[in-house]
Length: 88
Image 1 (cartoon, rainbow, N blue to C red):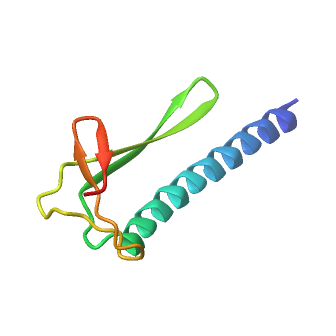
Image 2: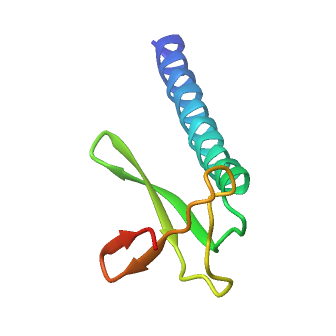
Image 3: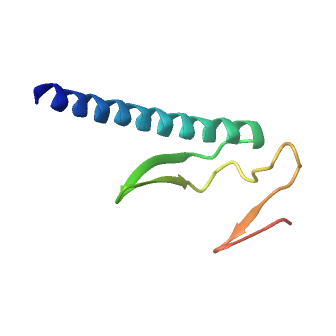
């Protein structure tokens, strides 16, 4: 009985570690993508939230002080007015 209990805890710990590693890698990849795409990086806050058995990635982008932000690959500049985003 103790062997099974230990195996169950070990499996849950392994799954928890894999989930945390995936979350960390995903958010690091997001930051890398921003560095590759934008001329300046706005301040962002990232976190994960568990809703039921799902993981939700939350990214909050602070209003930047060094506007405008431009995609360095496409040279598009995006401006946000209220809830709308448009290219000038």
